[in-house]
Length: 380
Image 1 (cartoon, one colour):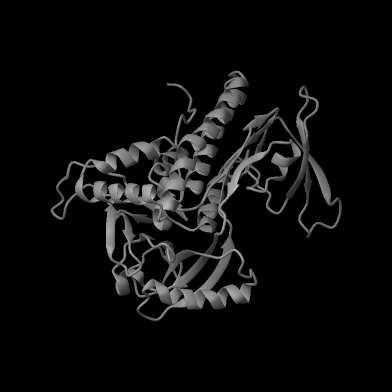
Image 2 (cartoon, helix red, strand yellow; image 1 turned 30 degrees about the vertical axis):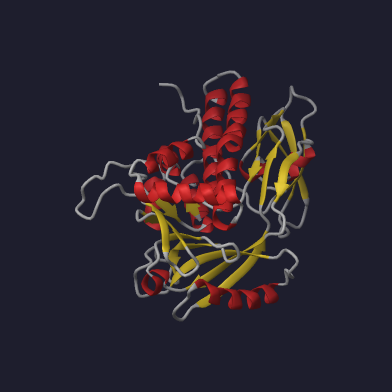
């Protein structure tokens, strides 16, 4: 739902940025950290201009895209339809992969969707397989690559979708982090209102995502989660009428595959790495994976460059997650809830930098750019 600024050049390179901007909400206001009562603790501005339009000497981030994953997927599919060489098949379940003979294409066993009445399983042959089948990747497990790391203990997040005007009623920005030892949360505009439009300022009720934590010991029964959510929302300074439309649990983890490539199989997205969602870094890093792999495959298949380029690309994407995304997402999460002395000191210094130093944003942007790494575009 949240796409950080470094995604914008990637979407531009794919030729879909303008289409995405038409459907998404581009947050140029910034990121806010607030206490549980809504008071602003710090702000990271996206636009380096003052109220008079003058540059302040800091960093311009170009904005954060807010767009639901389903709508982003639809936009990408519409663009792919323009290419006769691309065939997208939904509902096919990967069951395993055979690549024992490296002189021949890999063989992927998939199960067809339920509506198919005959030949429930089919073999798809491919010169290369990009496994992007999620954190529970069947392909990663089939080729025996461990998913190393940890699941956050004593923590379960609830993602609640609510129709409510956080801007009009509370004066919030489009993206807000609530800092509190118990009631820490993320409150973000989804990029659409109840009519499907992408502006949060109209007459229709805007859709927001409010993500908070609760004990993993509590039931995952949907009706019980919804009932608890109704009570929990009262603690987030909601002042007017609202409508809770959904609330679902998910566990947080920091994990990375021990290898990014074995033979003809390369891992990408959550199949390669998985991190907590604070800051929208998982989706951002996954898109950067896709761009890099697409460029590298083009150079190898169409350009005749050595296969080793794909191995290097896979290694670069894995290292970018370990060095940048993983560390940043852990800091982002702990900043919201931790009472440990060193984290509190780091949080205070971070907020002081944002509030007092116009150049502090430049340091943040530099760290974020480390997630991009090399894009493996064709050398000029």
